[in-house]
Image (cartoon, rainbow over all chains, first blue to last red; front, side, top):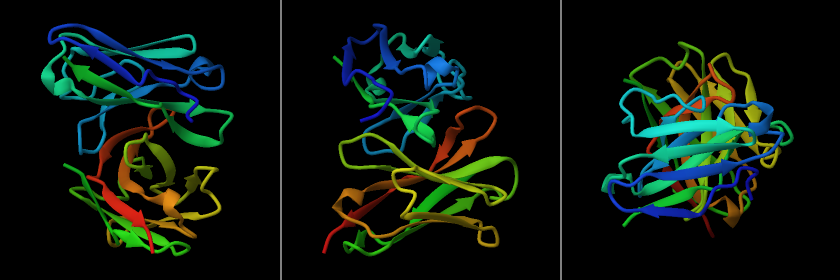
Length: 112
Length: 122
């Protein structure tokens, strides 16, 4: 079980906006550590989607956005498209675990 | 454009050592400031960080695996490797190698290999 909790699934119709939460604690997100987000399409390796809480790597559409507040972070997908159907993971650092990286539990996004 | 490719046996017997290699192409493993990392994913489950090696050779491991993990680098071959000893069925997973950029904390994994499935079974 991860220290970063995500909802198991979220869904939305094409064109809608969906958000995915990543809930942590004072030893990780709340301590000020950055949060990154990854998209994993079925049968493929994860892809960096957002880094440093809200920055998009080159080539990532601007309908993906990230934010952080307190002990949580969020990934928003605006204008949901069929190709966005995938698993999404947050990642941060936890000072209590002794491991430089910890991933969230993952969220399956379904486009209705 | 840097690319990563995992290689190694797809089947390992219980109690034996799992050995995987990640070959870096399109750039030198020695250039820049990167962590070269291993991450795994059991079927239908989430991602687990295994460990990393810095360009200059220092390593860090997941405490839950530390007693069984060794990550090394061979700059002459532009490769880095993972060894996981005393494997059990719980180590069955897709294993990814990844490059991590160091400018943020924690590091962000910007380039991933395609992954290789390793099954632990007799």
